[in-house]
Image (cartoon, rainbow, N blue to C red; front, side, top):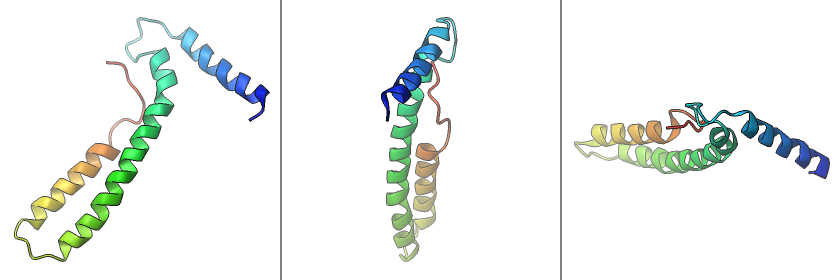
Length: 92
């Protein structure tokens, strides 16, 4: 990136941080600056979960285990937990 683009991007983040009120329930500056990092980490976790759960579910379908429906539901719950929900950083 050119230094001019870095300055504009950095200025935008600082503007978001400065305009945030400390009384905001959504985290303000921390949420504005931390959301890209949170989304990137969540994407890595989601991709890893799907990469493990999809083949595991396919292999499970080929078995004759009596509990394979319960195990498949647990795999689906894990994917929903790691990939679902908010992708933005919210304050507590």
